Image 1 (cartoon, rainbow, N blue to C red):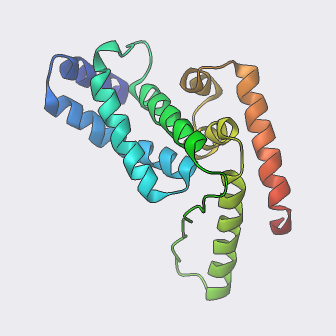
Image 2: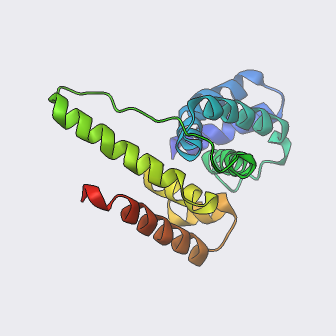
Image 3: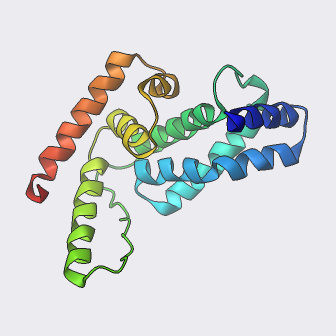
Length: 179
């Protein structure tokens, strides 16, 4: 709760022209915005660009921020929309960059198997339609509630549940070899 109060105070100060307050908002939310972008775009370079664009857009539209929603929800909405726009512009055959897991004291065979599993899941998520990908990433990786998803993706609860259900089924179908 104090994070929301702090965010509200920071937004108010930033709306009054306090750059340090906006920098604090960026520092607080930059990692989450980047995580969403990299998971949706599966490209670190594109995710860095989209993260930067998200905060530029947030700064420019700070005056229109609706204070009844959380700053994080507002930023998720901006980054998700930008990712969806970028996905729509991509060629369908574009090769995706892969995230690599870091070994944590496991034997080489187990690490290699986990890396292969991560690649399979990442590849499966990358093939999802953009709207399903957004819903799945925000729900499963960022832990947003269904109501937050309704706000971020600006759609109905049944639509969100349907997208997540179809996305989960598609990922499971494509990763059946790992079960």
